[in-house]
Image 1 (cartoon, helix red, strand yellow):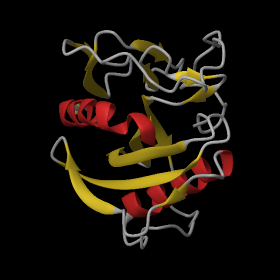
Image 2 (cartoon, rainbow, N blue to C red):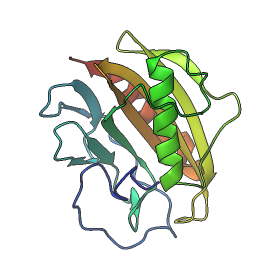
Image 3 (cartoon, one colour):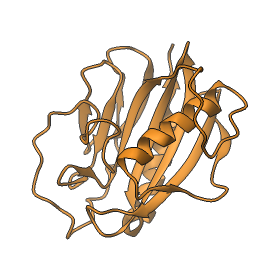
Image 4 (cartoon, rainbow, N blue to C red):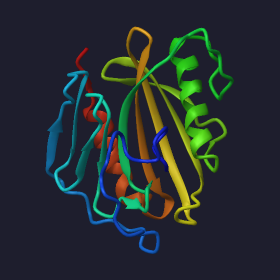
Length: 197
């Protein structure tokens, strides 16, 4: 999946390795976890200690990648977290009804994701309400055949309102082939989320 605006992991100027699309497997994620808190102090999260951390310059965004998590400039396995400001005057149609700020902002985010990753589509009925760090959240699954890997990609999107006019979002990106191995890690990361502001 191309990062929403830049085509790179959140804020990264990371040199890109050789395209790994021929080998979509990753090393087993470590069971040891390291804590991460961005310079903004907005949240805290725990991730496998054998994953790379690529921080954005905005003090909020970060991408966690296992080895071989990128094919060219395309994330094939990993987690991206960032904050998105949303002007509630801008209404965007999407999979959520738009009854509240979080649903409207999430629809706008999904629209942005799909503009840069047109092969991704929301799963029918996959949108649901949840709790993240005790706050109301939304979860939606998108999927499609990635042009970078020619395999089915699954992206789980999680959003939560954090401050005035903004949401915190997490994108959990996997290839269908390796989903069984990595989904428990994604669940651990999601469950570890603490929102500090």
